[in-house]
Amino acid sequence: MIFNTIDKIRTQESVKIEREVAKVSEEQQTLELPSHDPLLQSIVEYILIKDQETLEVECDKRLSAEAFGVDVETTGLDPYLDKTRLIQIAVQNLPVMVVDVWAVQTLEPLKKLLHGPALKIFQNGKFDLKMLHTGGLPVTGPLFDTMLASQMIQGGLRRKGERSNLKDLAKKYLNIELSKNQQVSDWTGELSEEQIAYACKDAYILLELRDILREELVKRELGSTARLEFDCLYAVVELELNGFFLDIRKQANIKESLRAEVIHAKEAAMKELGDINLNSPKQLLPVLHDKTKIHIPNTRKETLKAANHPIFNKLVDFKEKNKFFKDNFERLPKKIHPVTGRIHAEYVQMGAETGRFTCKKPNLQQIPRKNEIRDCFRAETGNRLVIADYSQIELRIAAEISKDPVMIEAYVAGKDLHTLTASFISGKPEEHVTKKERQLAKALNFGLIYGAGADTLRNYAKSSYGIDLSEKEAKEFRRKFFRLYEGIKHWHNKVNSQNKYITYTLGGRYRKFYRSESFRLTDRLNSPDQGTGADILKKALVLLQPKIKGLAKLVHIVHDEIILECPETIAEEGAIILKETMEEAGMEFLSLVPVVVEVSIGDSWAAK
Image 1: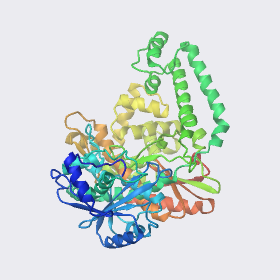
Image 2: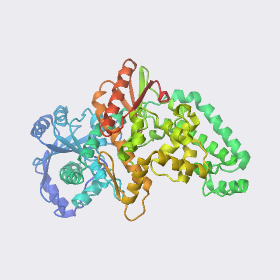
Image 3: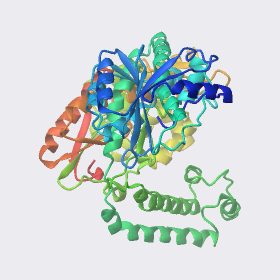
Image 4: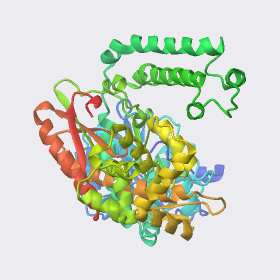
């Protein structure tokens, strides 16, 4: 692929020798590689295919292969704007097949090969799969991704400078030095020998890299996690290609009123603080101290909220309104793709150390829970959105991991855990718990399952739920929580006493921690819980993908939420499939507590 480049450093003499060897045939060439490269000491052959007959013959030779490396060279990185120029397929004991896509008449022989039962080995396969798909060559069958394999082995331990691109993996696992000279070369014109050799090696190197990484995965008992990640690739490809529809006409209807709110909030803050730059901490800090006599270390929203002063609150109001407007009504529409008219975010499978997805360009997982913007993410005409999320999945996973009897019994009985906690904390019967008391219980449940102290609990309750707690209240509520959920307390004590530098999800995924620095108990509790949640969501995507083929489009995911877009006439059917599939995935990991999924159908994301 275009950004996973391999190019050896050669002397002028070796270049001359290679060019003489290359004269043997225009289609089939032999490339002698540097003897200091352990993998590439032997002669590597490749065949450059520019005609239909040769393509058919060479594809037939490879149909019985158990596995092959696949790579593409493209004119750019956008699957809707850029084109694939070369497709390289490497099989053991055969020349690397380098297909000039622009030269052959039809790619039907390649379709047969890419649809076959052989294991397809990629490096950052998501990119290649998207380019192949939009080029009329969708891939099926088992996959192996060397980048994902490396990330699983790393276990979230991201050392400085350590990456999972092909250059770094070749150095780490094969002791091969590879350059990126051909990465930015022009793939639209007449191809040079250097480009062909480079493309050939991109695929060839995957064969031995896969063997080494597979051994590492087996040694670390990551086989099931690896298969989950590899199988999930297909769903992620569909997700990114489908995109999410943002209705800019809907946005235009409310944009000016939101702009007016920002101006009003700015005026209110400046009335208190004077004519200063409200986005400049350097200007704000001395003025805020002068006005309030309160020392604060920074002007971040969380710090201002925790101080809870009327002037600070006005500044927070402006910051929140201004950020919301700029992020969602100025920057977001610029991300709409010119070809599809939709937003195609990038979903990173193991973007977080826990194994969770992250999202970028833009980060649709951080769209605020406000109707003003979520109502703009809509189904296109004739379609509906089917929105499903796991109910209290982090708490259910915590109950499973800790085997807390009270939590387990409550979930088995179908009780609401927030109401149960509120009842115990307040001393009221469950039926008399108020909405405010239940909100407090949510702050306790989600804040304390990972071992938050009293101060952290106070900040969390304030920033996430708008609940003010005194230090005394926080300590008392914390004491009562762990008296009710003794299994959670024992889990915390056990993890703390073990002091291990590695944690495991219920599915066997692990996360490592640095030994050279202190690491927090909250991280060691959080990782197996959220990591198991990631495993569940990914399993749901794997199970869902074949079930919705031709019926619905996967358009967005958050950490416990999946959104489909489907024709209005089958929205109810889509909702049933989504709910049942998500619950099935959850039950593969949780056996002590039931998994509950809540589903809604609507015209927009705000229907949830």
